[in-house]
Amino acid sequence: MYTQALDLPDGQAAPAARAAPSDSALQSHFDAKMERDEKVEPRDWMPDHYRKTLVRQISQHAHSEIVGMLPEGNWISRAPSLKRKAILIAKVQDEGGHGLYLYSAAETLGTSRDQMLHALHTGKAKYSSIFNYPTLTWADVGVIGWLVDGAAIMNQIPLCRCSYGPYARAMVRICKEESFHQRQGYESLLVMMQGTDAQKAMVQDAVNRWWWKCLAMFGPPDADSPNSAQSQRWGIKRISNDDLRQSFIDATVPQAQVLGVTLPDPDLKWNEARQHYDHGAIDWDEFWSTVNGNGPCNKERLATRVAAWEEGAWVREAALAHARKQQARALKEAA
Ligand code: FAQ
Image (cartoon, rainbow, N blue to C red):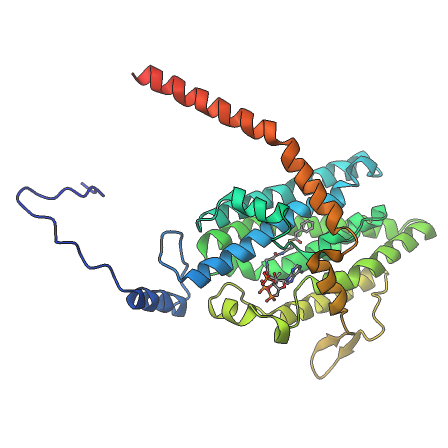
């Protein structure tokens, strides 16, 4: 019978403490696995730096999903119809679910959810720059779906092939849902663009405000991206920040044409030789200022998350008390 028990047939002594594989043997085993492009699973040995990089990226990603609920959440009570309200509630709820899968994936690396949330609430952890901008009109909700979710999908499809199994598997489901989010945003803009001049102007204004911020979402240029090279060697990131940004621009320009909006970049032009669109310069000073806490909504976003955590304390306490009662009852019944 198959067993994982450690007992041995009678009379057979346990082998004298088998020598633990040396760090260099473990490293070679890990390197060979990377070479074969195999998945790393939670119980596998991994270098500390690989583990730390994953915890950093996955927890930042989880925080982005949770903080990302806020800009659109502001519009749930103001959605223009019951249909749009139902869609928006479902979308915001999906983002919350993505955060939870991602916290779970990060927990498999030995960092607790409390530790990750503490880092977020004390301003030590990063989350995507994009969620520090305000949603001024209803058109912003459509543009977030079209452009922010569109950029997120472009960045996240390659993460379905990430070398770390739990992250890769979480991303498969997340990408399916993000793809619905992108389409609903685009569809709501298509409807607005068939409306009044004021509605069309509202969409154009939202595109003007979000376009450059979405390009910055992909992270700094490759030459200024300290983590990219190692993350690509480890198969965590499969495609570089600049290449993903370029793919996003190339995919989005024709969509903007169908929609009938202008992307706010006078230097955006098809380059026949490169077979890509050239584009203007991104304001990286503004990006870093936002990443470092000085964007228009950083303080508001963090304060909202901290308040939600504090106001939810009674729910966590009640759930724990209930679990303890159930455990005590089960023990009593078993006695
Ligand atoms: N914002 O060396 P790199 C979504 C930081 S989810 C803030 O290039 P890396 C769904 C970076 O952390 C959106 N910080 O870093 C949704 C690093 O700092 P650190 C989030 C940024 O990790 C839609 C430093 O700059 N998606 O939208 C940003 O190799 C609608 C140097 O950069 C993910 O998190 C930024 N934009 O590449 C929800 C995807 N970019 O940590 C609601 C997973 C860079 O060394 C509504 N993450 N930084 O202190 C990734 O793919 C990568 O982590 C990158 C950055 C590409 C974001």
